[in-house]
Amino acid sequence: MADLGPLFLCAPRHLGDGVMALPALSALAAAGGPVRIACPAWGEVLYRDLPGDRAGPRAEARPEETAVLFPPSFRSAWLARRARRRIGLTTNGRGLLLTDGLEPGSGHRRDDYAALALRLGLQVEEPPRFRATPAEREAFGGLPVHVGLNPVSRSGPTVEWPFYAELAAHLREPVRVYAGPGEEAAAAARVPGVEPLAGLDLGSLAGALARCRVLVSNDTGVAHFAAACGTRVVVIHGSTTALRTGPAGSKAVEGPDLPCRPCYRKRCPHPGVPCLSGILPERVWEALR
Image 1 (cartoon, one colour):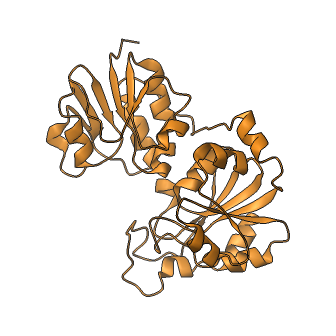
Image 2 (spheres, rainbow, N blue to C red):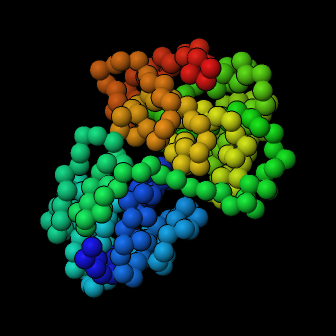
């Protein structure tokens, strides 16, 4: 393989996309010369096994670098404008800022990320993988084996299934609720009586998930991370669809066949978010069984 030279890898800004991009980022980081990965703070853990230096999400590419842009935003292309080569999807009107513009595909988002690596001659086919360290697993050794519930999403009501409490009432084994930083109150309200495992960094989350027999989740970053950790995952898709953003290896429970789904919108114009409220607890229970 030809020397790829210095690489500037602009990682996704959201955890779920960061996990989906992990195989492509791994291949690029291993194949390039000097590598810099621009990523949010959680990338320090998620990409800890990748070679190269880390930079903040607002870092700019250098003139000698080849920039591979995983976020679809105009801003990421602008931050890479000085790079000698700029590879990314032609989204959000940024095509003129790219030397290698790729049209987004109609398949899974992982395929779009793999296509970025393929432009530099790297074939990426494996699913995302993340391993907890022995210390991270040991820290949660006293946590009972449990069914995990992940009821809150930063994307809001168009992603949040409303029946987690009803599902929890059917479960006969220990239940634990997972919540991100600042989501404790919302998670406790979704599943009353179950104290959330909240605010864990990714390493600690991986340790806790090692004790999770199966996770029931909205289509969120935690679901993707859990699947990468090897946890069995049941994902509830309302405004989203597994064909586009489902975690690798997960079991999908899709919303009703409405003409408006999947929409990937942050707000629903229809009362009650019917793509989610139409998924009864019995369907998720059957998926768990």
